[in-house]
Image (cartoon, rainbow, N blue to C red):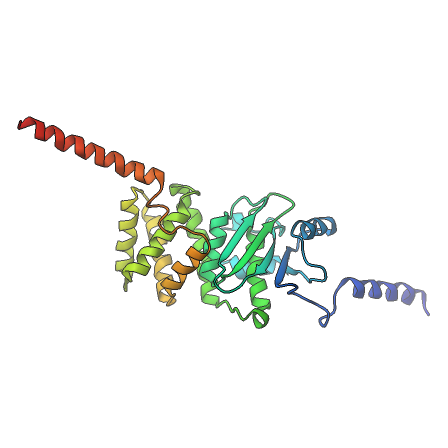
Length: 293
C-alpha cells in the first residue's frame, strides 16, 4: 500500500462514520423533527441538540444560506438575513386539532407571534415548535429550517406546503416588520389578525374592497400609517385573496395557535382610547343640555 493511500483510507472511513447513510437517516423520530443552522460548530451543535432534548438517533435537517435565500430571500430584508445560520428548531408533530405553539430563546427579530402567523399562512398547523440559538440572532434560519423540514418530510407527514403559500409567509414577515415600526412590535400581529378576521367575515372580492376594509380597521383602532404601509397591507391581503386562501381555515388556525384575533380591538389601550372619546362626547352633550335648562 502506498503512503498516500494509508492516509486517504482512514479519512474516508472517518467521514463515513460521521455522515449517516441514506438508509439509516431518520429525519422523524418519535414524531419529532430537528433542524440546525449550518453555521453551528461541533460544540454549538451539541449544545443545541441537548437544549432541544433531541431524540436519540435523529438526523437533523440542516438549514443553509442557500435555503434561506430560497425560502426567505424574496421578501425578508437582507439586514435580517445572511449573518450566519445559528437558530435551530425542534418540531413535535401533534394530533389534528391540537393547534400550533411556538416558544423561542435568544431570538431578536422574529417574535413568537410572527412565527405563528407566518407558519399558519404557510399552511403549518398542529405542532409544538421550540426555537433556540446559542447566540442572540434574528431567527430567520430557524424559520428557514422549519419550512425545509416540512418540505423534506411531506411524504411521511402528509403535509405539503405550496410555493405560493410559502411566498405569502415570506411577505407577511416583511409587512409585519415594517408596519410594526409604527404600530409597535407587541401590537402589529393583533392588527394583522383583526384584518384577517374581518376579511373572513366580510369576504371582499376586489382589491378596492380589501383596501377599504384595511382602512376601516386601522381607523377604528386610531392608527396612522403611511401611504406606503397602507399599500403594503393592501397588496399583501390582496395576494392572499388571489391565492384563494381559505380565510375560515386561516382564522381557525390562528385561534388554534392561541392567537386572539380580536385582541387589538379589545386591548386596554384601544378600549382606553374609545372610553376617553365616549367620556368626552358625553361631557360635550351634557354641557349642551345644561345650557337649555
